Image (tube, rainbow, N blue to C red):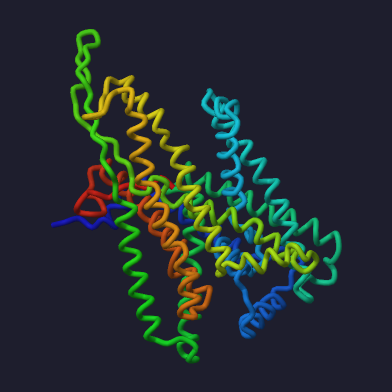
Length: 443
């Protein structure tokens, strides 16, 4: 009789503890997403956003920021900035490692990674303070949103400290999941925020159909399209190009090493979902500032109107950033020169390629793989904007049912399942899939 994978998961004590710990951390995250910051009138916020939706006003930037905050932005909760300040700082730190050779050398020394992580935390704190001030300015634009007893400098200081502390706490939650739970903590926080908004999105979709604002035929076509896209994302995430490597036999002392044939697995999209998250995070920062300062600054107001999330300039910038970060992150995580040096040092060779040309060959292969992979990511990420413009879907529903959300959910789900399967097989249980071909994605 075949065993039940779900039952097997909870039979393994170590795996059970990791899963329960991860779930408890995600519950804390979702509770914090509905706790408002001090000095905010929640009823006024609900009325304001409801009136904006009823009047058909463009909520592109707000919906965009709310999407990455897991629904916490509209609640003006203590987690309203989400985890994006940390991701933005990580982008900056990775760029600095490439620009400054001394910093990169320091990161490769003993204790260097801990120093880089510490600098990233300091940078996250600075980015949080800047974005939290933009939040304060945004709240002042909403009539009567701030209670009279908390107006002025008192509200500014308390709101900035509360929102900054919330993001730093989320960063700590992610690190705790990495250390004591299962899966990638930061990715799981984003995943949980997307999943938590699905019931509300389905409710909005039902209301739009009931009110006659959406053609049911368009909804069915869009649903079939999303199912097909999920299938393509799964194949793309799992696909790989195998580079054969032969190792010569070596005699060390009385033992013989090598003499085996293996391969280097190059993913069709080596960087996974990282380019999409990085690009979205990098665009979120200026959009948030523009939304907050647009009323008092003509320049920021013009920028806000030009870079609306569903507009042409935004879609072009988003595509360019995704392609750029696909190349950039692959270069950081899979350096062909380092891979070639490792192959040569271990007595390996690639059939038909001279030893001194291995790095050039690997670079050529990666470039051929990255471009179509990054363009595929960009097309998938822009689907919500296309659906909104063509079918008139509500922005909230479009962001949840396609594009970035699908890429993140599929990537995180595959990574989580592969880790669970690894634990099950380590304890001599069957895996989650019969084929045994479930592959991990490093998110």
